[in-house]
Structure formats: structure tokens, C-alpha cells
Amino acid sequence: MTADRTPAQWYCLLAGAALLLAGVLGFLADSSFDTGRGVEGSDLLVFEVNGWHNVVHLASGAVLLASAARRTSAKTIALAFGLTYGAVAVYGIIAGDDVIGLIPVNGPDHVLHVLLAAAGLLAAFASPRGEPLQTTTTAVTGTTPAGDPAGAQRPADVEPISGAPRDRDAPTR
Image 1 (cartoon, rainbow, N blue to C red):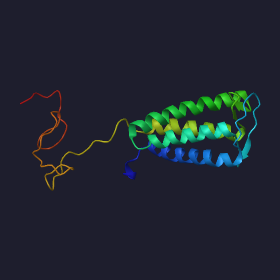
Image 2: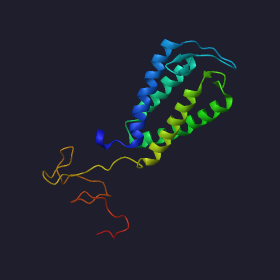
Image 3: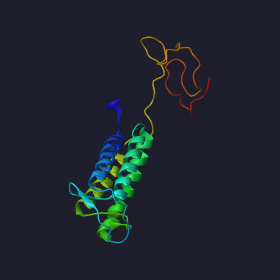
Image 4: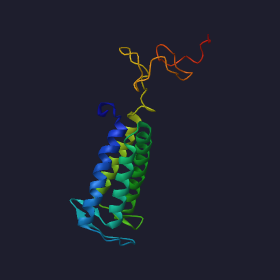
């Protein structure tokens, strides 16, 4: 199944794991929940974090990981995260040192937010819509993947012999 992952699924999986890890490790650097203009945080490597920033990372990572399993949810969440992180990047750059008086940010944070936004948007737009088509029969055994006989009842929009989708505009027999 890993070869069938879309760019959005990979984005959700990798960015989600990284943000979850950043949230956990961030509490080792700074677990304060201070608020207000000019809120200060501590450095996690080169990124400025505090308790609120860590909670955002944990929540973001969890949402991304939860959406990675399905193409549709991964595409939607990658797009939403791209737009959200883009807005956070713009707001953070304009505001300077914090986002809404809760989350301390610095230059490396701004760069990371821009990269996360761009990657999310690119992954969403590069991913196909919907879930992959499921094969309903196998030619070798004449059974469906669930082991049902090839003659088992099929949905009305599937050809009974080939298992191919029916052309809805074609005349019926």
C-alpha cells in the first residue's frame, strides 16, 4: 500500500510525525504557558517554542497523521494546512515576535511555516481526487477479492462479467 500513497498522504504522514515530535520535544525546551504581547519562548534547536506552541504542534501532528490513511482526507487536510500555515507565516512575519500573543516565533519559525505551507499546497494539488478504484474480480480464480464467487450479486453500475464500471449513458439490455 505504501507505493499507492499520494503526495498529500506523504505530506500528512511526514509533516505530522515531525510536528508531533516537535511538540513532545518542545516541552523539554519550554513548557510555560505565558501570554501577551512580546511573549517569550525558549529555543528548540533554532525554533522558539513555549507550551502553547508545543500544543499547536501536537494537535497539528495528530490531525495530519489521522488524515494520512485516506487519499481524500489527506488531500483536504494538506490543503487546509497549506492555507493555515501560509496565513500563520504572513501574520507572524508582520507581527514579528509572536502570533496572537500566545505563540513566540522567530526567523527560522517563519521560514518553516512558509515551507510547511508551500509543501502542503503542492502536495494537495499534486494528489488525485478520491480513493483508488477497487478491482471487483480476478481473472485467474474467477472470484472477488473477498472470495465470493464471480457470479455473486454486483452493484447495478458494474458489468456482471468483466466487473468494469457500466457506461451510464449506454442503452440497457
